[in-house]
Amino acid sequence: MRKQTLIILFLIFTYNLDCFSQDAVDYQKLLIEAEKLGEDNEYGQLSKAMIYQNIKKYDSALICYNKAISLRESHSKADNENKIVLTFNTQMNTGSDDLFANGMIYYYTAVVCHELGKLDSAIINYKKITSVDRNFGDAYYQLALVYFDKEQYNLALEELNKAVKINPNDKLNLLNRAYANMQLDNNDSALIDIKKSLTIDPNEPYSYKMLGDIYLAKGDTINACLQWGRAKDLNLEIEEYLKCKCETIKN
Image (cartoon, rainbow, N blue to C red; front, side, top):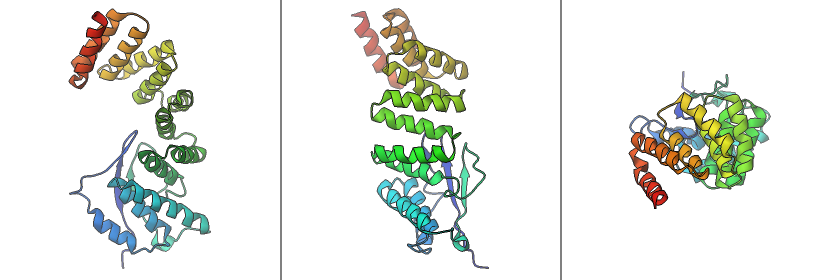
């Protein structure tokens, strides 16, 4: 029996999309197979979109995502004969391999829009996926990152509140909510989240860095340098930044 399905393997992280190595996946071959499904096949367009996204050709990915969505909207039902099986390793158990059915197509479209700097389009698509699945915490988290780029910290904070409610022990949710609060001068609220993040991961250098920033904002330069020193010990990449800040304070 002729094989009519195309299997694409992806590895998806908390706040980004990554892929297996080029050696492990022949993307050109996958593109050729996807092309065989035809320009008017929504699953073919979806396959090409995800392949292009995985090799960071975001302009091409967005074109294909939009075509896939347009084709789905114009069809009364999916073309099951040529249905593509999409296999995922995710933190979200959708219970479906159909990105149209579970709305995940909007999530990946939003990721691509964000990569291309199309922030308003990213917001629209992230909100579409949260309207389908209100418990998809990563969508709220990613939406907050878009608002960070727009410097709309109040809106970012609203989305991070939702993300934390769904995943209260995710340190990235906590640290980014702390950052939003710091931008809004809500340092006491930020302090609570940072201290909680340290109970989850006591070796996270950026928790100590942010603690130092808060202590500096409160005028406590001794504790600020102490926390930055802890951050430096855990992550030498920020050593010069910390050294500069502490020397500035001493002077």
